[in-house]
Length: 207
Image (tube, rainbow, N blue to C red):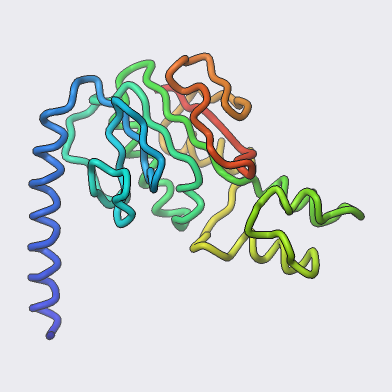
């Protein structure tokens, strides 16, 4: 297939996906609540979004593309173990899109692994128990292997610590941020959403 044919095929796929997304979103109750990169975690009453893993998704969409929605369409946006799979430029693009989509006082909750936690575990004498919070890190041979796996495996491209996550959210236009604990939030609908023990960095950004 030549370059023009590939581009045409990609355009047809995008057009089909756009039509399906527009139809699905037009039927959803407003304001919308988006669960980004849902994988197999389904939130009832939310729009569960994923690009490839559609076991639980009711909307197939590339998060780096603009959603076919007007500004201020959403009250809540959530993601767990998603943003570390994007490079920093695409991550910032996604944060900016979330800022656009949220209505005033809407909340974006980002939950992810913590680089700060991984580095702290690396320098401890008893490093193994901390890394083994990640099921996939059980059985690694050295602390070097554990740190590299945490940063590079599963398609990870950019791990955040709290300072970096705050920085990027502020660059995206969020002015009010709060650090929150696993499963806890001042917003009832954002409580008890986390599913993974290694989710140790959670920030809520308020529009």
